[in-house]
Length: 255
Length: 227
Image (cartoon, rainbow over all chains, first blue to last red; front, side, top):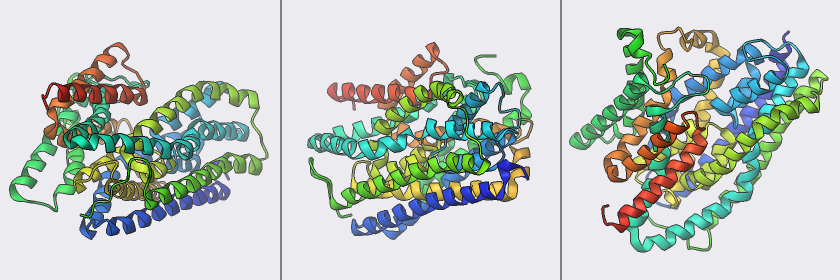
């Protein structure tokens, strides 16, 4: 049997996945109890869970895609482990490719040397684990400092609202800017016609759904407006890619 | 809704408990993660050459560790403590956990940096982490051959996955832009301007720039009483 997909590898995957699920359940239960103490309704908490599940489906399929892409070289189990815990779409690909390049290989070629496989596992792990050292050291301090700043700015609640919204908008703005004029290292998903149309579709559908929810008081639809807008925009990308000439659909600023 | 705010200098017992447990789980996760390559090397009876691994790490660490510092500083105020501890263990923060948590807080009408926001963000990120784990596990065990074809660059569905980030952040941004359009334009323009000179700039760095631009722009507008 291929050492990359042996029963032992599946056992490691089961252990890591059990850890992630256990931690998630622990924090959900803790937060749920606290939420009820704070007077947050059961309906709001349930809506949070359901809308988060719906929200997650499409990006999770995208993550699954990365698992499958990496599986060609690394077998399916190691990418599965890495992307179920701490991993990230971009980081895992870059880390494994970097290690394989040192061996004179790439992700296009299946690893058959166990020593190379072990080396890739180490680079993926060490490269992306630093945040787990930082969060126990920094999270509380950061939160207390932010708490102080918010407490001070509560003298002007409007200012606090605007600054809080600005911070969120700052994050979103980075991705909007990338959709307008970003270039990816591998050239897949570069900004151009399709990225802008997808972006605009998502915004327009989202605004339309919000309008409908407000106009007709559709409270149950509201949590799903965002994921539905996302799926609509993805559908638009598929549709336009089929109906438009390739030079239009595949136009990017970098040719 | 009962309001319980933290004082400026201390955290509530709940928040202190979240930090204690968050630290325990984070250290546990770190050990679990390090055990993966250790188990692999012990089982296969191979240990990679240190010099080769260091050569690769020398390229990877400056990017990833630098980004980790920026991400922890940037995301902690957005996600709250529970969301941060959980998000950094379960991964895919920028492309999934962060927008998921922000969307949940927006839907519930709660603010980050309040305990209500902390609760909603934690539940959202936990639900997202479990969903991701289930989908990946189901995909690996059952649907891998089918999904490989679905997401193949030649597949009809491929563009949906190629442009998933514009779809995701366009949908998420719309609500914010509608409510706060005056403070939204400037950070986007700054982001595009930066990309004109450095189009491949890592998103972790770009986010830092656009957040500074967004907050700076908002403060100026507040001073000029434009918002």
